Length: 74
Image 1 (cartoon, rainbow, N blue to C red):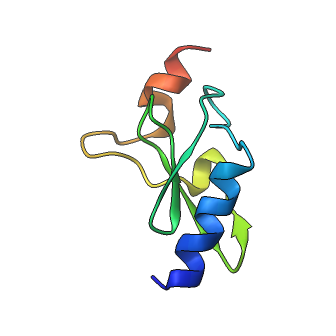
Image 2: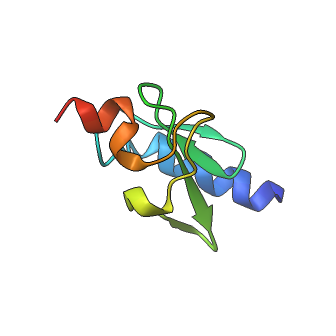
């Protein structure tokens, strides 16, 4: 992870991007945008926020997107 990737993630978080599943505002953690509700981590690659649920890094103990707290709130 580079400082540029971290800055890009922060820029997206500051712009008000939300979790595509639960609509919670995302926070920046390194080169990821993280949902505070379900813990899904969306990567920022080459200045692009990868916001598809399939792109998310899942929290420990979660095996599929359907198990995420935000998915269950729909």
